[in-house]
Every structure is written in structure tokens, then in C-alpha cells.
Length: 200
Image: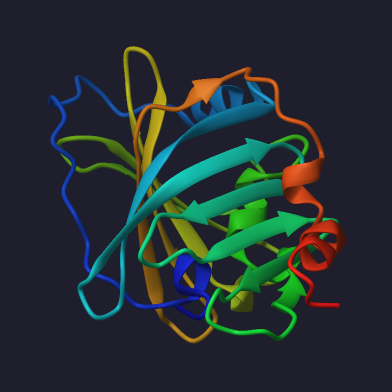
């Protein structure tokens, strides 16, 4: 797995959720994303070749997220310190790293999410099962975009599809997110993770 989470084409899945009464507003979605700093839950990822990987996600806004992939994959992706690191368990070399700001995931990890910013939202619709919002960095649309799916009553983030700068896509389906959980800084510390794995 090389940057499967953030940078690879995938299949798209429909959400098995009740039909929505109306499209959720951008202000409601922004308020929802700003309503929690930490969250924890399970995720399912559909990979480029159609295979499925699963794991656990930890979120600590701003700017931090960790994806622990379950066996047999056992990969690890960490965003922290303005960097993203992709750890390959089959390799004994340091992780591949690149700036978080160059990934669309950065947009929902911001300290203050505001989808009303000019040219940030490039799509906002009700697909019959969820409200779908497509956003991009208005200063750098070449970095790609992230398409988010939200259900209502209450508003919840259920899925995202990231399109990278090369047009490749990655779909991540979220389980129930437990918000407000206590999460320390260690899970997002890339240098400490490198040291703990003896990769420095």
C-alpha cells in the first residue's frame, strides 16, 4: 500500500442510509466539523484494485489524523506536524513523507472549517441518501478535492472520496465516530513513531 488512503483510485460505494428530507446547509456542515476536536472510529477503505482494507481512525484537530490498518495490511498513515507519513510494515526504511497542505484531507482538519470561503465549495447536492459536498483549496485547486457525504438528524460525516492531483481517487467509509474522546499527542508524532520502529 502506497498512499492508498490519500492518493489512489477506488470504487464508489452507496450509503445504506434513509433518504434525506432536504439538503444540509454549508453552515450546518461547517458547524458540525467545528463541533469536535477529537474523534475515534472504524473505517473501511476501497482500494484501486477493488480490494477492501479496514482499520481504526483517530482525529485530533487541527491537523492531526492517524489511520491504523488492520492485519494483514498493518500499514500506518499519520498526519501531524504539518506532514503526512506513510509507514510500510514490509519495509525497513523511513516512511514516505509529504506536506499535509498538499492533500485535500487538510481542508477538514483545519482549526476553523468554513465552507463559505470563496471558491472552496465546487459541489453541493442531495444524492437521495446524503448531502454531498465537494471542496478544494481555493488557492491550490491543483492539489485535488475531497467529496464528503453527510447524513442528517443529527448531521454526521459518513464517507469521503479524495481525488488527488493526478485524478486518482480514494474512498473511505466511516463507522460511528466517537467524538470528544481523550487522545494524546503521541499517536500523531511522526519522529517518535519512526524512532519506535527503529527506522531512523
